Length: 370
Image 1 (cartoon, one colour):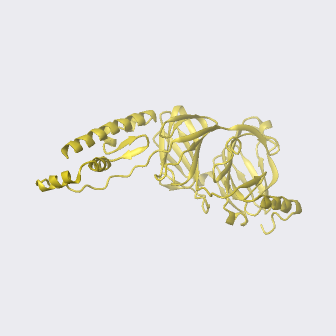
Image 2 (image 1 turned 90 degrees about the vertical axis):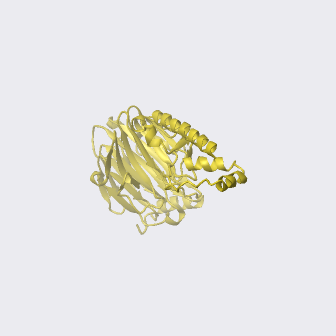
Image 3 (image 1 turned 180 degrees about the vertical axis):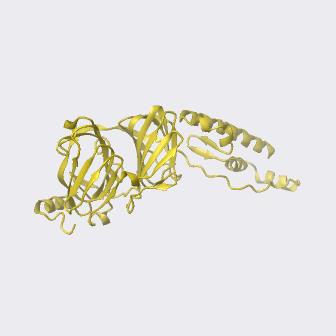
């Protein structure tokens, strides 16, 4: 048995070295001494503790040999406290480059979800609009309808004004967010409130479950001062939805239990955050480049990384600035697993429901009861 313990110790030592090397590749070597990972092993996504190695080794020892050890007067070792459970980092499944397109009344933007990547349940679309040329954004998004899903608008620079068919009106400035639940139907507009300068923001579409597609519309308008910001070592995180780093974002009451955070990394900065088990997740690099996931894959500006699930473990989002810093939008949501029928501004479960949505819009019934 003593030989087994020595073998386990050697295995753990080798695993510690792998942890240190892996953290070096993710830019975390400054905080990752062998002492900090002395009780852990990591190799190819498998988390080991010394107890796991001993159990595995003991399984290969005949029961008689163990009994002989007990009969020979050897005392059982004292019970140790349970060791900390550590999650594996989610790795990058695929990387998709955002595709240039035009939407609204001629707004130039880049589409990361909804083009090359058709959807990532429950996320239907992700657009980025970024330009300091007014010709690229001035026409805006005049009145248009929605039914059956939610839109999330998040601004970094510039200002937009939204108005809708039920009398809501608001201004989105730098750092603000809006989570609109279209439900059974709404007609709204999103128009620039500036004539020059940088306009930079994002719109994310989030699906609604079938039972909620015809609920009453609602808005959650979030001014920048209501979005909590967490300062970390060489990193800053704004939390729009979900919980991260001991704070909770202001968005609530969303069926898919979303996480939406804006991560800014300085040179040499790293960040690690647990993602909810079973949620689909992505990381969209909006500036610079970052090494993401267990393998430290480099993802550059304008690229979206789909994070692979780690079931049954609850995986972490791990990123490190690749060079001079990075900015990343990270989102996660519980997949609905329902049929999706979509056309233009409507997202339902069947083609018949899509046909009815167009008919309701044509006859003025889309917003009845809104």
